[in-house]
Length: 470
Ligand code: FAD
Ligand code: NAD
Image (cartoon, rainbow, N blue to C red; front, side, top):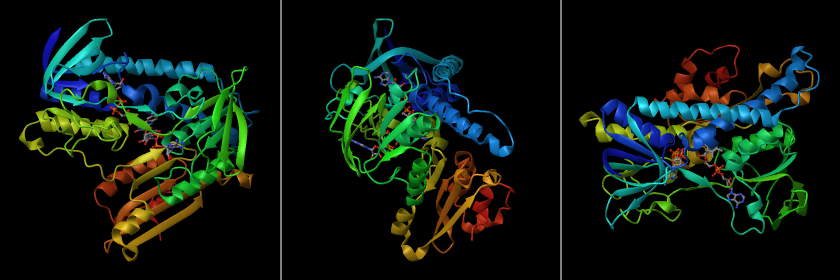
């Protein structure tokens, strides 16, 4: 089979799907998408945002049920979580989404090519070879090719027995709830998965290299989530060095020999999850054939318009390693299609990667946009930065009899320059993910502290604190 398209997209995940559909549905471009896994939707739908949020909600619900007594409800003992049954329900939902994505492609007239792609032909050629899942090999050419192949979860190569561990991909394959787990890595995934396990009653050992989690975030967030996790019973192993070894015991359990702030020790767990970052799926693509440049981390090098160094070849999403978030891949993919196919009014269309709101589904939630306090002080100078803080116990906790169970909400607003423009906003507390979206719009529009103050508060809420800060 050989076929030519105007637009050929490699990777049926967040970025690829959004870009191909925009090109075909809005601009009538002949487009195809190549997806190797047999399931559309990519990381986010299959082994990322979606099943993660469902597990987070289960864990959050467990917390709310355990708190129902403070609201005068006798729910007896906290019900046992039926992990196997719930995982089946979750996966059935994901399969429904896979089907919806397939039908959307049909509706938008994007051809769906099921198979693994790589470049082929002589050096300098822009031809794509696909090992179709049906067993045949097909070749495609196109005026424009988008690489949106996403990434893979890293596993350390130098730890004896490290391969007994799994990654977030393996987390979603767990059909039984582990009694004891070790999670390694203090970023988004480590924090989210450790929170889910702990909330659902698994003994959770969380290994981090420093003293706090979420080290890329504002110090307030680092400290708040680190202490909250300890308070909620996560066994946090600070200053953990690389494991000396991981051994598999006859029982199937894993014995981890480690060293942390308290010295050398051993633990037994039923599962070990590496959450130490992700790398791009660029290796098998034969990028040397068209001559697409990659960097030291094998990430695809692009400019602000998502162009690679090869004319007519572009990349968006996790494989460029800029901001590994689904809405970022989607927005970049759509803007690229607007620029390529939307005519002169879109000739400068590109994604602005500044002030992208992002959240961590921890317990409690984290929301953040813009600069951290150290970044703001560096950029604007100490004298031009003002920081507004608010720490309070939300009304939800007012009727809790047990002081220990009350949780703090913490907000920080960072303003810069004489007009007090909001340059950073950092939230820890219930509903932060939902609260942040609207404030994101205001901050993108250049809101100042005065604009915040001019907005009348909504009472009684937690978010009202953000427009009444003094
Ligand atoms: P992907 O969605 O990974 O899609 C790439 C696709 O390309 C895949 O389907 C893959 O099979 C296919 N592919 C790869 N190589 C080839 C090839 N050679 N031929 C054909 N097909 C190929 N982001 C958020 O915004 N919010 C969240 O809550 C969130 N939670 C996450 C939780 C976890 C556990 C993980 C791992 C990620 C999470 N993310 C979240 C990040 C988000 O999933 C990614 O940023 C997003 O999926 C990136 O989209 P993409 O299009 O670049 O790649
Ligand atoms: P990450 O980069 O956020 O965190 C990786 C962590 O592992 C860092 O804290 C790092 O210091 C640590 N680490 C690295 N090597 C280590 C080692 N050898 N031993 C111990 N620790 C080590 O990566 P991630 O958590 O894997 O997530 C990947 C990306 O996916 C994120 O950066 C984010 O963009 C995206 N994501 C987003 C969400 C969300 O939007 N809620 C959720 C999950 C993932």
